Structures are given as C-alpha cells and as structure tokens.
Length: 424
Image (tube, rainbow, N blue to C red):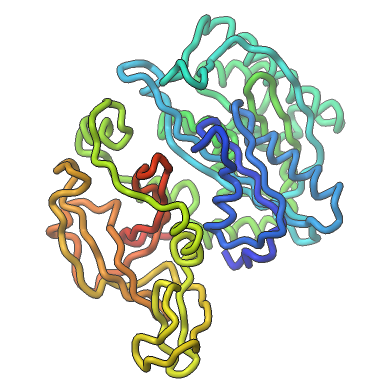
C-alpha cells in the first residue's frame, strides 16, 4: 500500500467475535502490523454496528487530539451459526479496513455522522450459556431494523440538506434482501444507489457488511459522489461521505486485491466435513500443544513482527532474532534488526500426513522459504489443494498470519505461507 506503519497513530478493532473477553485484540494487531508503541488502541464489540461506531470515534479522536492524525479502523467477524439453520446459510467470514486521516489529497471525505440507540431483543448471544446466536421474534426485529435504518439515513440527509436524488451510494447493513429492497423503496433512492450485491454472492459479514458494501461500490467511483454508510445493531450509525479524488480511489483499487480479487481467489471446500473440522463445531479430544508466554514475549520481533537479523560484516540476513552470531562469517554482536519481506520462493519442502493427531485435510506442506531480500524461514503452507501436484521447489509464495493452536489455554498465532493470490 505504500503506507509506513510507523506513521499510524492509532488502531481501532471492531468485531462481535473478539478472540478474548478480557484481552485487547487491537494491541495484538498493532504488534503484528509493526506499529509504534505510543499509539491509541481500542476494541469495539458486542454490536453489529461496532464498525461504524469505531469509525465515528476515530473521527472524534483525530479532532480532539492534535498529535493524532491517522487511525486504522479494522472490522472483522467470524460468527458461528448453529448447523442446519438459516444462520448457517447466511453467515460469512470477512474483514475490511479504512485508514482515517487528515490531509488535503484524500480520496474520501467524512462530512457528518448521526447515531441512534434502540433496545432490540435479538439476535443475541450470551457470553457463557450460548454457543450460537439466538433470536426470538424475527418480525419484531425486522420492524425495528427497518425503522432504525430509515430514520438514521433520513436524519443525516436532513441535517445536510440532501434529497434522495442527491445520494449516489447507500451502503447499509442487511441480512435479508427483501427487507433491503423495502428500505430502498421507502427512502426513494434511485435505481442502483442501495448496494445489495453481496448477500447472495458471499453472505452476511456482520460488522464488516456495510464496509464491504461500500468498498464494492467504489470500484467504479464518480467525482463528488455522495455516500451514506450505515451500520445497524441495537441502534444505527449513519455516516455521510463524499468522493473527493476519483483518481486516488482508482489507484487504490489497482494496488489492492479488493473484494473482487479476493472473491476470485476463493476456493470451494471439498465437503461439509472439512467445514465442520475447520470451524471445530464438533466436540472431541484434540491434540494439545505446549506454549510459553515468556518465549512469545521474548521473541515478539520474530514471531509476530517478522523481523530478522542482518550482519554488518558480510550482509547475511538470518532468522530468527535470537542469535548473537552471524551464521556465515561467525562475527559476534554485528547483527542489526531488519524487517523481512512477506514473499519468497520455496527452497525445499516435505509433506506431513499426520498433523495434530489427525489425518483430516492432509498432507500439509512444510516449506523452507527463501524470502525476497534475504532470510530463510520454515513455515507450514495453507490454502493449497492437491499439494502432491501443486507444490514445487522454486514456487512463489506469500506469508499470511494465522492462528496455529490453543496450547497453554492461549490462542497462539504465527505465520504460514500460501500460493500468491492474484491482483486485479
């Protein structure tokens, strides 16, 4: 993206499926992204409008603190649905991110926001008692949802002297295409204004839904287009934006995979059993790995931030960062920290047919990778079909940060490699 991670002053993370109930995910994400320590971080959770709420709070924070000019807002959800229910049909896993910043040459400008608070019975999920989302009376929920979305959009337009004809893009949360159409009709939007192309293609992304709807709509932007972004969940947030720089948006889409690029790179699961195993929907005795909190803390530069060491004497790059001596020239205390590339080529590999005490979804390639610009790492490969045929020496791969296991009753993350996903 060409964005220096050290230039970001804050990170807000929004999700209804936080990893922990008492531990900040935003701080962990900031560590993995190699952001500075002197930044503001916060988690927003427990409501599907957590994403739009986080975005609004980012705007407020930048206005209130002169030392903060850039906040990264990330939304992500992996909601678990009870098997054989309509929730399972509708739910999708997804994430989106917006960088909120001050400046003159910004592609999108936030003009105003307005919020509503409404006590809704459902859907809900209790912390300890419920494994899956519950609901009571969907007719009542739909009525409150419809009223909240219409009211928040009407109010944000009224505050800014806008008519329905003035709105070019309306990206509001929905999980029912029929209700979505009724809202568009009630708002008297022109055809094509209300974004509705995701549910049947991919599903309901939770907190990321309205963000992804907006991103999808921006693939063909119009100069000075008026945009309404709406999140819903026990109330609603309405955010008014306008497109300031069409060329900047087009450049962004060219430099990122975007929604369409990720959609094209998706692969269908072989069967329902693979889905159940990956989601761990069945209770069973699993292989328990060990984990050390002290080691993770000590090795944070290597394990999370993907730093290596470069020898000042001979220029060799090595990994991890725990050594004092160069592996080539043997010089002591001549090593500098260096950020490693997240792409490389397979030097050699093996196929492991027994992983975690199970033969499900095996073999797993274990690859020795020569990283671009130096350094060699050993990583498992993911997102690969028929590895016996599709993995080869010299193959180009990219690194991706993934959860490995829950050894030590802690969620442990590390890097894996995967085939390079294409760019549009």
